[in-house]
Length: 210
Image (cartoon, rainbow, N blue to C red):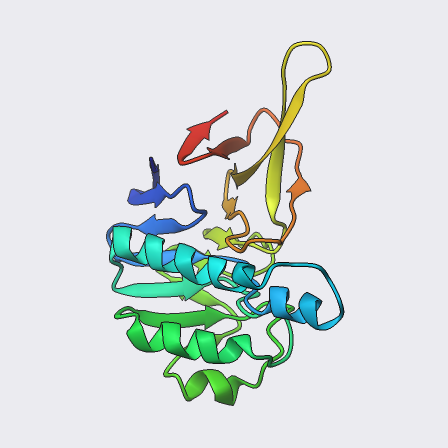
């Protein structure tokens, strides 16, 4: 179940798969998919099942099917490394996806821009849309609200005794929201919110404000 939130008088849906849907623009924001990471590590001997390669594409298909966005903007680290055999899977996914695709580049996006341009994917270092800044790295800018990724945010919840649970989350400060990593096998980084921050944890198929 998605969580609805209003920012700067605009409606957004925080999806439990890790995307943010900007309702007025029909724009889906996704960060840190890290396609190709499984194949990259398998190449160097990591014991990761081959079927894991397809998991990210199944999740992408699911969120696109549910939200049916006009545009998809990847906020960096779309592909984990240099070209490998997963690029063909990505090409096939792009070909069957009806939405326009945009990439805001991140530190892992080292594949030649020409490869993306051949798939009609526009590439930008950042995007400004109305009062919103779309970037990969967290950044604050005067009079703008930032959507970004890079951190792979998580929050630690403590229960009775020494029990604790770490969950991926959408991490919102006054002028910024850090999206969770969309990709499988990406890891997380635990953030400690202040009283002014808002945290929306992903608990199975639900987004919950904590």
